[in-house]
Image (cartoon, helix red, strand yellow):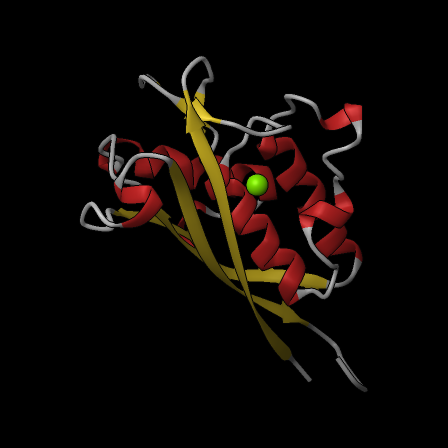
Length: 166
Ligand code: MG
């Protein structure tokens, strides 16, 4: 028996001067960056929360507390790799990942492919299993005003060889 499980992740970070902008593990040259305890990679955080949600592993705040100095400034791709390890340990395989970044600027299109490659590499899956896209919110709300960025992700996991409950 094969079981499929879906998960959704959502994250927000504030934009501020004097920080690097890192999205999907890609450092983008921009006037502001995202504020956070780690590298504040909002896209990768949404993906991690979707994965942990689908596997019922809690959330990234529980797995990697922002009060822990070990995670200060850490690359979120490293944390994603750890999530991938936990998933495999729990018997899950990733079917696919979709993610959308909500940002007024800068233009994300030139970096989408590299972001998908980075996320896939961190998880040890094929790039074809990962899709990254971006949208503006038409100048509305906190992403529209440039106060912050948000990201959503939906993932599908597969658990093989089940004989009982999920
Ligand atoms: Mg976050």
